[in-house]
Image (tube, rainbow, N blue to C red):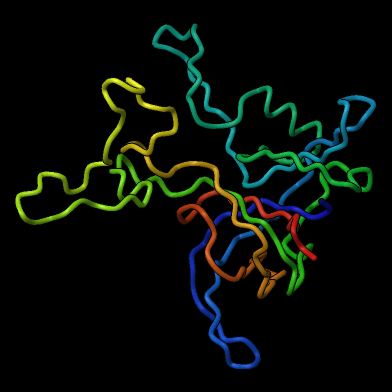
Length: 226
């Protein structure tokens, strides 16, 4: 993998191609990302580039009523984080991820990675946390069929037989049952880059991308690209 960037999902729209075809696209705010650490085979056992995305405010520290004990508020960069980013020469970042670039040695601390690393026609993989659906039944969660709805049937949207009483006398692991649906790491592969707005760091990708609006998206060069 040679190209990757972090971004946020802006939303979906549609555009017309040069030959007049209507194309549904997802708009991503891709970058700018900054190199915060370079990992090498000698120091870390592998080669990788750590990048940061979206500025993060410093953590607020206040005193208690007696003016002695320090109270740390939850949000904001800690002292350790501030020192890590200061060493790289960049401001504190909210999101930090690693990419195992083949050319990791070509990067330097505080280098800027922008949307223009991708070009129109590139194939990419988009990874994000999918939308959460809450607790759902087996029909919606697993696509199971419903039972008869008439003639006195009392079996409509149940998940079906779970396990016979005598044999096997238990429910097998992996049985499709109601439960929490969504909010898992999902990747859509081999998406095509339709347009690149280098000035505003926007990527227009054909089709849909996992996650709700404003969610963090990882865009990588596709592993299946020809």
